[in-house]
Image (cartoon, rainbow, N blue to C red; front, side, top):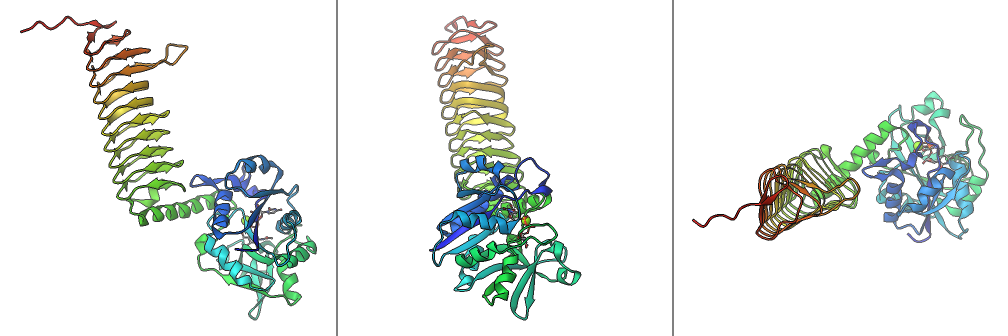
Length: 449
Ligand code: UD1
Ligand code: MG
């Protein structure tokens, strides 16, 4: 999109959100409204993006990865004033075109933006219009014959104007020089004492300039979010889109309505996701997995053919052909090898389990390394905290930890070693060693039979 620069209007107070957080920072599907708008603009291929922000937004915006250039609007005097400030900050360009987007419309797609830019041609302005119900609070498009004459805000409209079904979506492409002239001449004589960007339409049209409406039939992409019910319904639409994209790529989602996704996830084909499952924060899931029902993945990496049922996986990695859950909790950079089995009511924190290791029932394994094929019995606890410090437990390959063992860290259980049921292990156990009791002591050697 050569010669097209975009302005995002995002400084509005958003009073209807009733929030301490600026409106466009409210999130849907794990990203702020503003992030989604910027993402769509990047997808449109505009040359530069300017975000009009309020002073309190500046700090957060500076840290936003998908950001554009920030221009601060000290006082929110209306959408027209916001555009004027953005234009003042942009180096004037001959023949430039400006795309204007609202920061509170996260569902707008790059195709809609491209459509309105395409319709501008060598006219003065093009704008996206949408058919809406009489209850809509969008501005009404007043036409004279085929031509657009002006836009009237719902608040300022007469009953006859309110009955107009064609409304203003708030997305415009404007010839840069004409935009500069028009916003400079705006007045604030209206219900809100604001400088309305929409008033530029009347000014341009009455001067005989070409203003081209682009009727968009994707009503669901053109919702503006002003309160929390609108935020919730936009989230549903966005989530539906995300689910649809993964389903197209070969993921089975049993119930998209109760599967909660975010952008920038990887999910391999033939993975099946059961209801009430959330996959968030850049998680990567392999092929042929079974996830859920009732599972949460946050910054999780899961290999292929792994099953995770009714569990919470945070900042952790699981290998191939593993089984986790129901009711397991992995956190703190836990890493499970291939073919590991984790059963119900097992919590793992910063633990590393080798290939085919097992902890099937009721355990806390924290700050621990567990060798390949070791079996951690029911009720085993790694006592990692001595009141001051966190200490590590090491369990060797093929070790057998008896039910209800307490392993008091720092402690090391050797390869092929065994602890008896109920052992309280306070000292290292050598490879092949067998201990039991409280405190655990070596068991007498078996008599040769
Ligand atoms: C605006 C349009 C309306 C259109 C609707 C579509 C005007 C006057 N009206 O109304 O015709 O149907 O969008 O969503 O433009 N903002 C600023 N600075 C300000 C005021 C607003 O940056 O001083 C930003 C807001 O953060 C928001 C956007 O501009 O992202 C639109 O403002 P908002 O107050 O939501 O306007 P609407 O009443 O929705
Ligand atoms: Mg709005």
